[in-house]
Length: 161
Image (cartoon, rainbow, N blue to C red; front, side):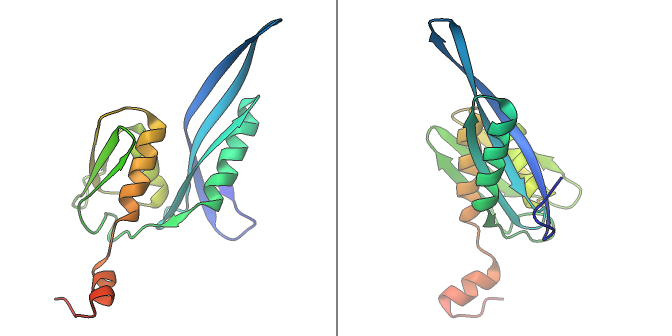
């Protein structure tokens, strides 16, 4: 758990560390890329992708980007308001609301996003690819399409029961 200048308690999860090798005259030179998801477990989350020559600086860069790009996610009673699907590249993610006690039924990449956002009961299924970066981006794309009942009433100007 990281503290953001004493404002709010943020949870950060390292989803994936990638190693890249460049062959140079003296041998191989390695660089690292880190995918990190950051959230306050109360409806705000973001992801970041940082690259550096060592792992800790790559993780720090990713955390910094993730905190900058946090977005608000509507969470109602520990789940999402309605079923939604998101797509990024070859990855497709379907998110289905679940009843209390279900838990987070998801793969590692989608699970980290749900935990960071504060979603505790959800069913998910991913299609197309198992690339963590594509799945995280598809999950955030899906979560950005969520609308609460109050949002729909406000947009339509009609009370819904």
